Image 1 (cartoon, one colour):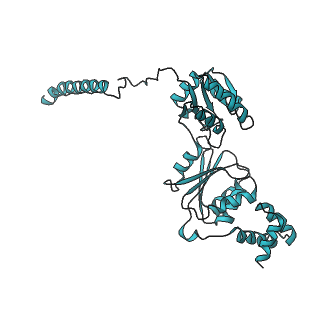
Image 2 (image 1 turned 30 degrees about the vertical axis):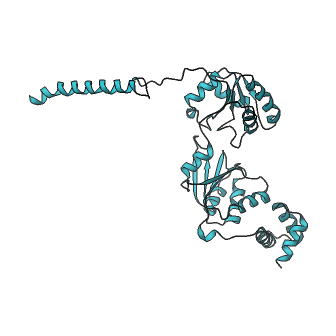
Image 3 (image 1 turned 90 degrees about the vertical axis):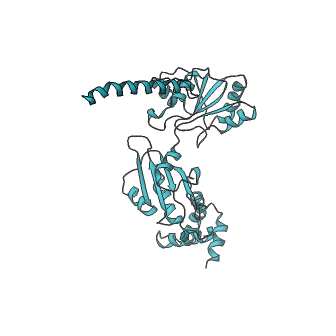
Length: 324
């Protein structure tokens, strides 16, 4: 009986405490509505340039703030208007668009900056991710800043940050380089600069070049260097390949083809790997490799190596002669 009498009392106490909590919450500086519904910012959008991050594969990653800005802007500048229109149609956004990409960036930046100076509200988006990060945006931001126009970043997805967070490699310090060079010699020179790095290195790479790029990682940084290949982030076929460079390379070599957007992460050098190696020694190693394994004669090997390392043939020849 005593337990039954206590039930109404406990219920009444809970209601009283709930009331106190609601009154305190309503009076606080973080005054949220008691209901669970979010209260969108109803203030009109201020003039300025809005850098709006868009999903890199999963439309659920769009933010409420991004949608509000895209709906309220006077104009949306897009890397590809056709691609962005798919996003806008999905969320029933009717804001007009204009192209802004690497081929018209210089001229279009001046045009858009003039609109911003006149008080327009312009949103800048790319096909996926954050504008200006290995995508168009720098020139327009620079022009806006030079004119004293507000530049407002609207946060969201960024492939290299997601890849880094889930990589398992050190995240306390890192270098992001954008895309690796498509030319083998330049790519190897880029990798040479990371040989003794004490921080994680991050690159974007095209799927049709990732096997070749990993081969260069093995050749330049060694087969045991830790790497991560992050592929198709946030999409159905999202994948992380982690391990020694030679192991990850072998995994991809066994596949008929590699598809999707790729982020390549390279772990920091171990203490034993931090030994300076000159370009000339790498050039000599490559010469010997080609002449033995690939059966090139000296003249043909010199021509090919000079192209790979971005050197003149005479300079490559001098380096080769010094090694003899």
